[in-house]
Length: 264
Ligand SMILES: Nc1ncnc2c1ncn2[C@@H]1O[C@H](COP(=O)(O)OP(=O)(O)OP(=O)(O)O)[C@@H](O)[C@H]1O
Ligand SMILES: [Mg+2]
Image (cartoon, rainbow, N blue to C red; front, side, top):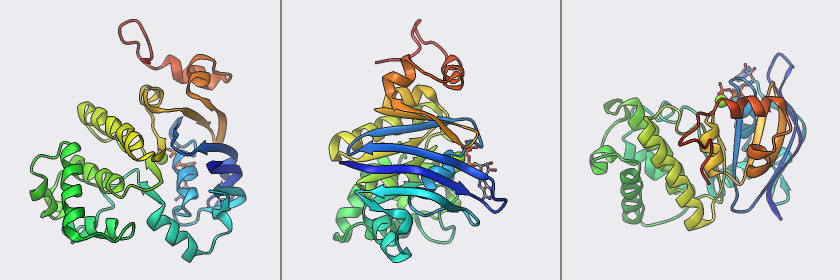
């Protein structure tokens, strides 16, 4: 069974024009799916709608979003909150900026984990420190003891990503988790996402501007253009047999490395 099925979903903000129009896609358990497309095409809107976490004024005006066969669109806030806590986690586009400025990282980390599981404090602390280390944060214990204002933007971003991953949800939604980071750190984050899937079978939906990242990571790719999901298919279909002119344009923009555009 598909873990997630988005069926004919339309999402509008106050002005009433669809930011996402009639989008459909399906994701099997353990798959990595990337959503690519130009700025403003509706990528963030689409993945935030899954968890009912649209920015103010946004709402789903049509369609269904089935998670394990249950329609998230029809769920009451309380039911959604249970799922948000335990089964689906989200790394926001500006995750670093979303940290509470007046709470130490370890407090916020503990809260992020506590909604997912009841574990003795020490176990989570060790896992947290391990994940921060994997995100190339030197001295992770000091980071845990810091306030967000003591960390750089890139460090906060990495803390936010680590929090989302340590929670080990069944479905991880990640909105441009790497775009604000240095190239080497980006590569590490991408590597960690792949490890997460390998180790825990985590299903991942990733929004990215980077077609190279999408090609390296994904089983399936969705392409958005002007509020439409213009193309959705297997990684090979999209990379080697794109149907849409817009997808071909995106692919052409990816630089070739060693004479080949895509590894793998
Ligand atoms: N809070 C909001 N209120 C009103 N309109 C919004 C809001 N957030 C997004 N929009 C509009 O919805 C459309 C899709 O925006 P969205 O943020 O989903 O795009 P995106 O593909 O994630 O872009 P980017 O790559 O720049 O992050 C845009 O036209 C945008 O102006
Ligand atoms: Mg976005």
